[in-house]
Length: 507
Length: 97
Image (cartoon, rainbow over all chains, first blue to last red; front, side):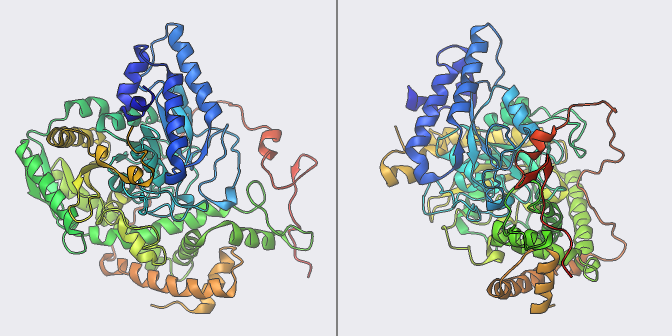
């Protein structure tokens, strides 16, 4: 039973728990056992909070025993990206500067998960302060892709994605600033969603780039992602950029899973040269599949999308250089060199030099450059104008079609170390995901097969207008249903990285 | 566009990062490469295009002026690197000269 529980979907687990066929405590134990068996290889978690997870599961069982009707995710375990504050677990953001930091309050996302009866198993690994596409920038070592342990799980939410793909948790929460949910979902063969900006709260999310940061779900099915999307979303007065509007009907849309009559646009700028052939093959098949299901496919050019990457690498570092100024060694976190001879400013500079890793330093310096007088207009100002052009491209496109599609990322999972010394090569992983971050609209990645040349998962990206998040799930649900039926099983059943490592991938 | 080594040292100072010579050398090369790449934004952003600072613009976000509990001193100081007399203890803030 224990091994069956870790293979189930979140919706399935919640149903089993609600029906009393398994207790939330048993479900949590099964996942803790799986973590114990495989996480030494995957390294999805920075901390496993076994005691508080057990307590949360017991509370769900007690509520059920008392006759309460449980919510749709009550008792379901989850891996929480270590960028969300948790009052009962340290929050490090993958950084030495916050090593062991115990936040004084819960993030809104954390609070909503607890209120939904979701069992937080622990804190998931990530690129330091969410800056990266591989988790190699974590100060505590990289996570590994369950499809092939020598490869990256993507990033920055790579720990959450690896936990879900490795059956250590049916659900994960990540954050997307330039693709940090969708890209790891794509390379791990799971579903990841960036909701509309402001649809999910940033309160208690340690800031990287405030105008872009968006919390969202990672799951093994489209329906599970929708259930989690709904659980963490909605207006939050504690976040001044939170949108005061109803959560789009994502769960109903995932169940509807119907694309007939829908107009779907293919973006020619996101594909072709520089894209791995197997990625384009699977993407082409996804287009045919959607057409066969009754969608109308048209090509829609978004001419400024090719400027999204450079604009992003000015805007995000600029905001980061300002946000990360809070790590000043005075009120919390690391302090270095406070020996009575040094000034506060010297202590600050020494602490930041020791506490931040190479990529974080690069981005702080890049942002400081882009915002400095004399360069502001030529760099940050121009990037903000490009952001307007990208929003206009989306607006024009969505006058013609209901959703846009593209590959999620130009290649499948790359090898650990392969791009570590080449920042620009690493940045290319987010080529297709960045436009939706800059424009703030909703976007989803789901697996659409394996690349023939390396047998690794390929992600299909679906992009919808602001606050039309439900369309992502309609399309995603339809694609997932057909692909699963054709294979006879979910794609993730073919992930053999853990089998090959220790013979423990399958039960 | 290229960025001079001394400019990189100045940026490190502005960023409050006490970097060693070797780290500055490495960063100078990388920043130069990245800045050359991102300068492409200048190709398309013509005058007259309004800048966007936020994807979903909201204005005048207010909430009711309701008193809610805040962090007490004990909780606020719990993670401080150094505490003295129920306050954050910090290194001296003025240089000696």
